[in-house]
Length: 218
Picture 1 (spheres, rainbow, N blue to C red):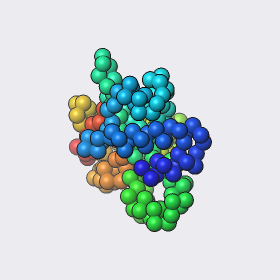
Picture 2 (picture 1 turned 90 degrees about the vertical axis):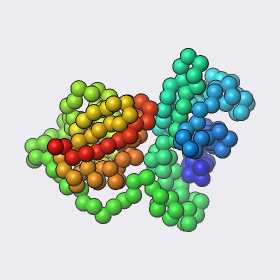
Picture 3 (picture 1 turned 135 degrees about the horizontal axis):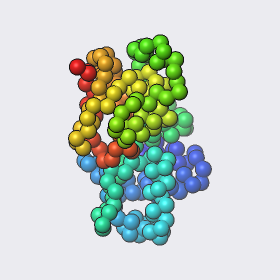
Picture 4 (picture 1 turned 180 degrees about the horizontal axis):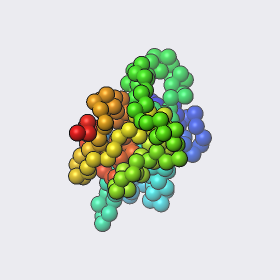
């Protein structure tokens, strides 16, 4: 919440108002056990003293800025559910951590969703494949996974190029997305260090939260 606050106060007026409203929503109604908020537009309009039309614009703004992720669309009178996108909040707020204080910067660095590591990226692709940058999105019948890969390539190009592009789509039973790695080293690195990025892209493109399993291709 401190990260959201300091980012909002140092960005433009639009972000200041929008993130202030989000912070009120978080402190009042965020379900930390389920990691989501599920509040009707009428209730939000009353909380913020605005119209329901403004509420719709705010939620759209959060999703476009990737501050929140839609877990479940609101349909047929059912209220939608959303969760905070922690990697994006860290990325957006990181330039302003020092304005809070060096102790805050240290704490945030220690709890970063994807910490910097000493592991050296190893290119397991053939030379021809490594040099071909025209389209490194994997060929698969699952168009949603292709969309997730495109999202990760755009948002995290280095991580995607060195690691995630080495994965192939295995299966999605709507509870678990299985991704295949060619060896244990790649599987372990992605599962240990990059899974927040994969989770965000999968939720944004395949739908509500699924468990991500990276396994070695047999």
